[in-house]
Picture 1: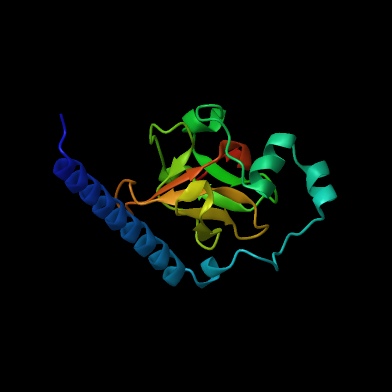
Picture 2: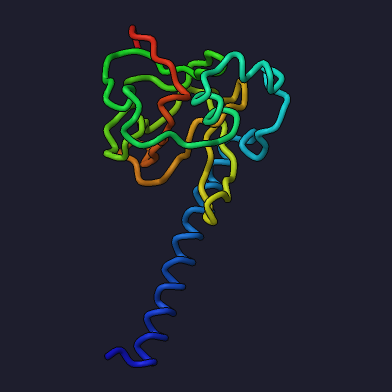
Length: 175
């Protein structure tokens, strides 16, 4: 039977581990913001803007939920997760080229994953939803929510841009 002392020591170790993980995530967000000054704010002005009614007409209900309301599609539901053809992935909201197929990898998470975006294609910002801190990724041109970036990706960046497939379109061709 666990003793009170063992319980308290385990709880203290758990709090220390959570604190260390939170500090690591916060430092990742700070580094992303420092590397990308626009990351501190995801608000307007964007080059592409529409009213809510216009976005609803332009996007499918699933695209609207993800791009405009920061929803998350079900894992393994996007055909783009397993698409490894050469080409470019673009924002489904505005057509901005976001990722090259050269940076795509299989993260075994059920969402298309990339180790780097195209230059000046995305911006990041803090996301405190789900009672935890994450770094949100959104389209720099229209502000659409794309997904999140994590620090468990492959070399050379060590980052994993975990992107909702419904927020993307794919154009085969040179990457």
